[in-house]
Length: 319
Image (cartoon, rainbow, N blue to C red; front, side):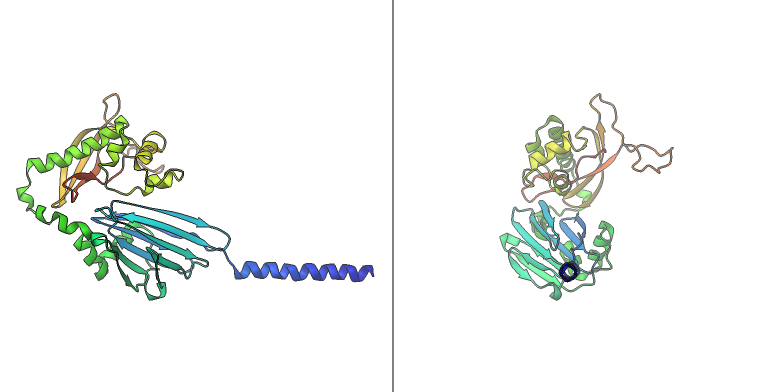
């Protein structure tokens, strides 16, 4: 009787062990994707790449702001993102995958079959959602900005979208003057927006600074997951006071390029609080001991549809 009882226990444990092993095999945990977001000219891109085989690329006109929230449990990875176009229209996309190979994907709650295409171009002209879907071989594209932009410029659909500059193209057409007619007033308006942006940050006037910023908030959102991603003033406050952003006054801003009629590029020098020139040490531990410290930083201001200039880069970060 004792022997039979022991064999019964062993059989019971063996059966349940097989069930547990089968459950683990049949429900693998999906990996977190390699992710690269960015802005190129007047467009934005998002690229997600799973090691299993899934890849998804999105180009859109949500250049005013964007952000994502993601979660992973034992059997599911999900991601919800949003973007706001330059004229204030918001759209969202949602992705969920159980295996890193297939996924449920939707834009503004409209479902799309990724088997029909993994490249999307999203625009919101006049507040109307417009989505174009294409089949592309994306798995060979590395999740780095240079390769995503290179792919976009080589792809006819994305290149046409970039060339049209999304929803802002019509707004700046009247500003499309030859470069040789550039006036001192144009340069000074662009430079003043840049100076004001950093002056507001330095003074702790974060709402006023956010009103002069047109770039991505993704870095600040990643640094501060506990802050509402739409509370831009709070994000700038933490960037300047907690996260290491150098919110300094501008010492000098020299125009070095005008890539488009509405875009001005400056080489900027910053002043420390004691008035001395701010410099940044070489970025890497392996840098040559004689490597020079950086004292000039590139910043871009662009003309908005409203006639206001916005700054497109964040303050310098120090670890």
